[in-house]
Image 1: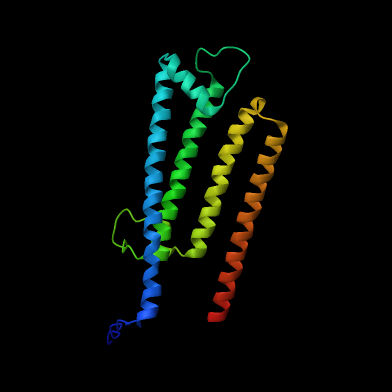
Image 2: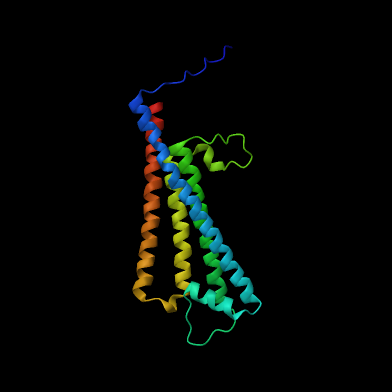
Length: 201
């Protein structure tokens, strides 16, 4: 059996080469998202330290938590209660999910639109990255946004007494809109994949 001939490197003409090289303009955008990731990590640890300090009775940390989650009560709060703990933990989960979204955009976007990372032999290569393309990335991002929206909606309902009824209704409507949008994107991607598979057969 003869091995296939090596692929010949294509030399682009100056204008197409210039246009193709413009993809590197996206690099500062991804570096900026990495900086945003650092901010989220810092925010996560600040909130976690405040939670741990509040557990051991720090009133300053407790008030910082109450302010950050927007919790209000008719009586003075001098110790952690279940609602505050739940809202803080949901906030931490929210940060983690947004951080996961950032990783998907940074790694998947760079791999798809800028340059190959050649991670095939790397033991920590994400499973989804091996078959990522613009359509797969779009569906994964839509799913991640639904998860983040769900956390925000749950936080709002737990703290519902401090929100206007219109806010609750609109947040629910927006979440449902995200859900139907993700379903539409997934359906369109499936139909396009099916059409392409039929064209190849």
